[in-house]
Image (tube, rainbow, N blue to C red; front, top):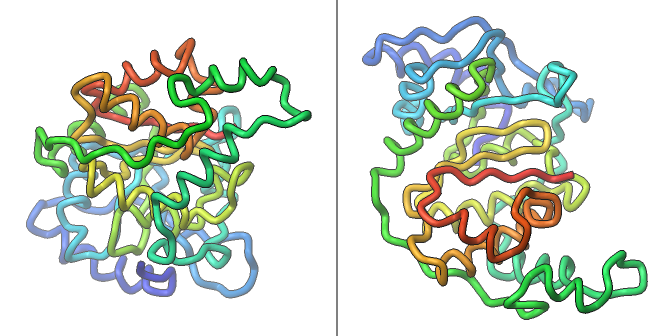
Length: 278
C-alpha cells in the first residue's frame, strides 16, 4: 500500500501516464486528513464531476501511475463531507495484509448474530434475521466463474453510477491495489462498527480474488464495488449474503429486502454491490 507522502510525486508524473489516452486531469486539489500529525495529503479530489472517459483512462493507467480512481459521493445535505472537510484518518489504519478475511468475517458474524438482554429482538427473531444460518457462520463462499473482464466491467459499472448520479466527483489515492484505496485514504465510513478500514480492505482483497470485484466508489458511509463474478444461483448467493452481513449488517438490518434470503436473491448476477453503514 503506497503512502500519502507519495501522492504529490505521483500526481506530478500523471500527465505522462495519461498521455496515450489523450486525457487531461481536471481542476482539483489535495486533501489533508484531520489527524494533524504531518502535512502529507491523503488524496486528490476533483472540483467538478467525474466522467467515464477520465475514470477509464485512470483505471487503465493505474499500474503505471500508482493512483487508483474513486467516484466520490458525499453526505446527504452537506457536499463538503467527508472529502472537502478532510474527515480522513490514514495514520490510524493498520496494514490490510495483517488480517485474515475468513477470521474477520467469522468474528463479525458472531458479533452481529449474538443474542443478549440489550437486543430489541427476541432470540427467535434474532435467529430469523440470518436464516437459514442463524448463529452458525457458514464459512467463506466458493469463488464464482468470471464473466466479463473485471476491469472493463468496472468501467461499465462506473458509467451506470454516473448515469444515476452525474454529480459524483473523482478521487485519486496513492495505492498499489484498488482494494486498499479506502485504507490509504483513511476513509471512515464504517466507523460505527470498526474504525480500522484496513480490515475491510482485507475482505476486499479476498473478494477481488473470488468474485473479481473492483472498488469503484465511496460516499460518506457507502462503498460501491463492481462484480465481474457474481453468484449465478441461490445457493451460492446465500453464502455470499452471509459474508455481506458480516461485512456490513446494515445492508440486511436496514436494507429494502424483507429478509435474508430475499437479500441473497438480489445478489444473483448483480453487476454492482453497494454497502451502507449507519
